[in-house]
Amino acid sequence: MEVQTALSMHAYNSSMPARLHGDDLIGEVLRNMEEGLFRIRGKTIVPSIYRIYLSTEDFEPFRDVVPFIAGEIRTALDERLAKWNQKPLKFAAGLLKKTPLNKTIEDEFTRIGSTWTVEIYPDLDGKLQRGEIEVYSELGAPQKAEYGAGSLTRRIFPKKPEAEPDSAPTVATPAPSPTSVAQGAAVAASAAKAEPDKDDSTKGRAFAYLRYAGQGGQKEFEVTRNQTVIGRGGRSYWVDLKLETLPDVSREHCRIRRDPDTGRFIIEDVSQFGTAVNGKPVGRNASAELPNRATISLAGVIDLQWETA
Image 1: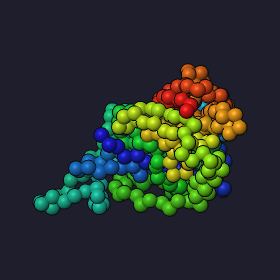
Image 2 (image 1 turned 180 degrees about the vertical axis):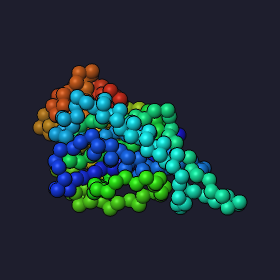
Image 3 (image 1 turned 120 degrees about the horizontal axis):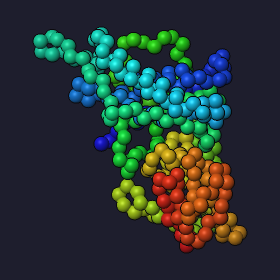
Image 4 (image 1 turned 30 degrees about the horizontal axis):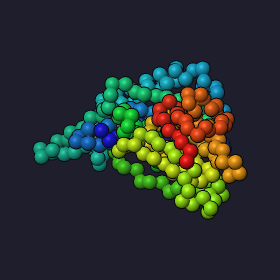
C-alpha cells in the first residue's frame, strides 16, 4: 500500500528559551499528526509512525529518558485520537457530509496498525540548529522495499502560544511552502561542493561501479567523478547516487573520493547509523581506503557491491 509521508520542522524564535522540553516534542508531533491527515471513504487516517530528530546539543538531555518520552508521546497521540472520535464535531468542509435525509455522518479517525511508532534520534548529519525539531511521519508501515527516497516537503512553523484547539482539525491538503532562502543556499552550497570534483577529462570514463538491488531489480551506477555522494537525498541534500530505501540510510550517508594522482579511493562515513566496508565499520566522520572489490553496507539496510574498473 502506498502511504503518505509528511515532514515538519519547527524553529523557535530568539525570545523562546534555548532548552527544549518534552512538551515541545509532544506539541510538534501533534502538529505533524494534524498536517498528515488523509481522507478516504468517510474515514480519516492519521499518521502512526513518527521519527523525531533533534540537534546533538538538544538530544543530550533526553538521551537517558528517550523511552519514557516516547511513551508519553504515544499517550498524547492516544488522547488526541480519542478526542477527535468522541467529541461532537461542528460542521466543517471535508469532515462531515450530509445525507439525503439532511443528517450528518461524522468521519471516523483511525490509524493503520495497532500501535504508534515513536523514535527520537540525534541529527548526526549536523543539519539542524539548536532549538529545531524535525518530525518525519508516515501513515503506516509498508514493506521495506516500498519506502520512498526521502525527498519530502520541508515546512517551518512558528510556535503557537495559544492553547491547543478542542475541535478536530479540518482535513485539507496543505499547500507546498516556498523553499526558504536557507534551503536554497544549502542546495547551492552542496552543488558547488560537488562540482569542483568533476574533471572534464573524466567524462565518459568509469573509474568504478556500484551495483545494488533496487526497486525494479539490479541496478548499476558508474563512478565517473572524483567525488561521489551517496544517500537518500532530498530537496536540500545533493547526492550523486540517490537510494530509495529506509530512513535508516541518511539523506547524505557517505562520500567516496578518488585521488586523481594515485587512483586510490577513500570512503567517508557522514551518516547517522553507520557505514561498513566488508563488515568493518568505517566510523562516524571517519574514512577508510576502499579495496578494488568490496561490499559497502549502509546502516545494515542496503549493500552496495563496489568494483574498480
